[in-house]
Length: 420
Image (cartoon, rainbow, N blue to C red):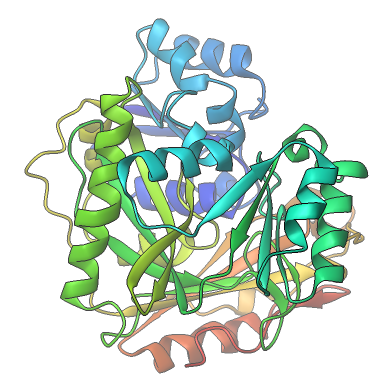
């Protein structure tokens, strides 16, 4: 069986790393891939936004399953195009992907179907949004409606910060068309977590939870990033059977049912970003794919054959599949370029990868290989260092010991990932 993975980041490297462990896989292609995936698969120089090129590649290579990693091609309708061509694909249609691509769509869906979430108002007029902001309790959350690479959400502690967020989004068009509409949302207090399930349109699999870290610097300071570290599982005192049951029954199942009832059944990985409030779990946002860096700490814990699970999901045959998870903890530390998530420089030689322990995995995100320098930095998030341990403390120790061996000019990483 030949499989194509679409994407070129650390999430896609993690997916490829897990897929090649399947006895049913004959060959893996990754488009466009990165230097990390090149060690596992055949990289093909087709961009994630080139839907025609990806469709042509899948046909020519007689690919049995295409797995889409990032949200952009899903938003562009890659699942619809592949479906029309009779090709199997793991990922939701363009309409179902609106659960991520439009925060307003997701909010309306949850409100219609009674899914617990923060109260919010939507605006397309800057003046009306400013006037509403004057009456909001603080802190308040300002969200661009569309895709903004994980950077379109501002938790504003003051009205000045909130007004700045509105101005950047709606007037200065920092996020382009994604910011033409905004949500102004109540701030929820509690611990944040990411929850994932496989969904085949009808069946929602058992859940797995992780925690990621969005702020760039220690102590949850600095700007929001696409994710700067993660760990899984959550402490048993937080992710209790009761909490897991409520998330499944009150959030994941109702949302999957709502999308099905409204004519847009969801197929793929459904990601819910939640807050554990005093009233119970509430939704912050949904994503239409695996998280990054959460995939880098969840997939190393998956005992199942990922290819089999994805095939059954894409075919609508997920019912009866029981997911099994390694009891060990996994911690992922993202090593980033100085200045990220703002402006940063790339092209710095990366050293120390040969010193990483054999039981620790380095997932490539923003790297490229050159003739003169070898492997160099090529993005804001450069690599994720993921390590398993019998305890969270052990996994954390291993991840940081190995992250400290990887060097390039201007590199930085948070020192408090999984520090409970």
